[in-house]
Length: 251
Image (cartoon, rainbow, N blue to C red; front, side, top):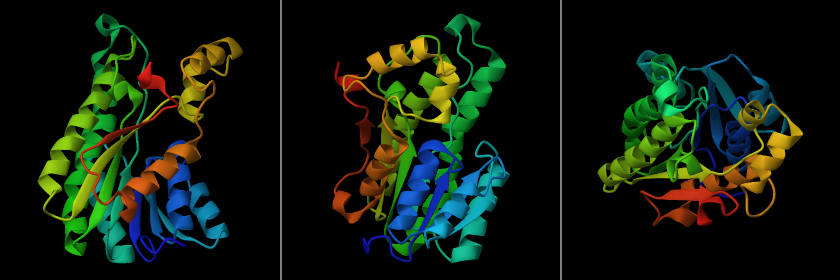
């Protein structure tokens, strides 16, 4: 077991499924106590962690709401006494439409969850992590934070914003013992991708062709990168947006 995470506390948002669930389980397997946060009441991830001998608790949180995020961090400290690491992963794809047809409602909701949500999480996580003298935060961006995608203006804008916000926080926290990085997943086999493809074979094949390696990534592959970025093995890495994308942005 990696002693980096033994008896340490990790918050993972959007942890009820997909990348968030994989990351929560990966941290627990390393010995961390994990707060599984999501806006829908779902204890399945917690149950999976506990079944493997890990320790976890569920906290309901809509990351776009200040009071929810503040309460999430406060409940974490009340339950475990500290916060050491965070993977701010919660996000939505929004509704696909060209820029001129994107609705204000879709724009506000997507930016509110994907970008404002990460800012709110860091707003309350950083002071608690600072109390420990050392820690790390990873924010979930996307390859859509590195390149453009037609038909997803709010999503692309939010993910580009996440990378800028991550770099700013990394500079602010550089002397505080807190490293802040972003992970940029490519096409990953998650419920989000299922929604985008509608599980239609033709559409799935189109998405697969976007990946030079010829396949979708798995949530566990992103989780492994997140755990590494939080570990002492990445002690000199901060302010970085890491593409874990099967070569997507190398094209």
